[in-house]
Image (cartoon, rainbow, N blue to C red; front, side, top):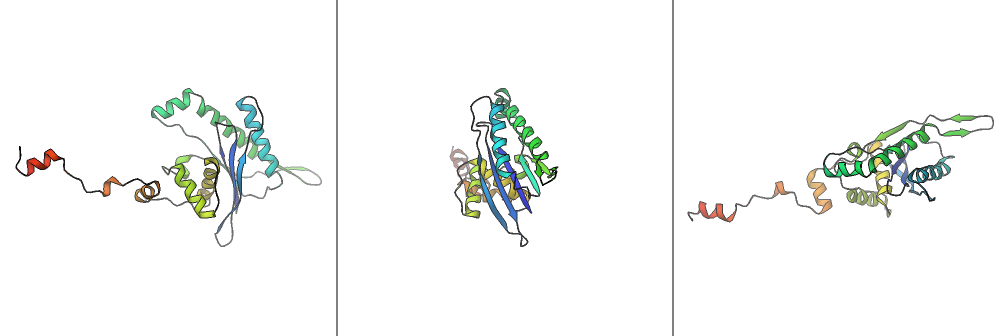
Length: 206
């Protein structure tokens, strides 16, 4: 099985991509990964279209994959979610995802006689689906260790992570494992130390 996974960027109008294969022994091979940049000036919409054209040129002749996976944003509550809506960030990402989905569902392959739509299964996957609360730096570190590569951007490592999730190879860690990777301490494992005031009262002090 071979999948093409994509992580769009609202900041640049570019995207991270990864092509992964699961062989007959269930081993995952990272065939290719990188960034499809928006190499034009203009509006955000212009940049999105340029990035998709670059992606299309790269993978037009490599249409053997079994699925296309696109990370789709999700709306969060609180200050961060409110700001993303006010600044237009979430709207830009939804536009980008919609354009990518349309591209994926309309990929065609030309033979000697006709132009054939491939109908490649395309799936939209949210961050909470594929990684939950795993921080980006943890995903990046895992990908680099697993494949022996050096990742330049979060969009590349996230694209690889989405592919690993779909192939059933992204480990769901416990809280202790996540804290270990991020250098944080699991407070639930630390014995509670009474305050000085409480301790003095237990000892009979005032």
